[in-house]
Image 1 (cartoon, helix red, strand yellow):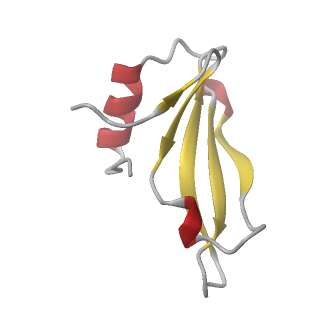
Image 2 (cartoon, rainbow, N blue to C red; image 1 turned 90 degrees about the vertical axis):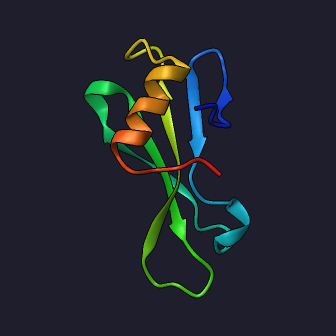
Length: 82
């Protein structure tokens, strides 16, 4: 599997929803697994009142995340990258 991700020096980011689907200014980042260095960008979809995940950020400084590990984590959690 070759998932499109955004790899930087310290992070790998996997988008699971397109940013244009969200209300402007509603996106924010929250920690979802500090032990493994995983954060999630959440926001309100246009017309929604609750938040939804937009992308996941895997911190390579906390855990030695690789493209293959991120792809496995996403598969294990039933997520696909857009």
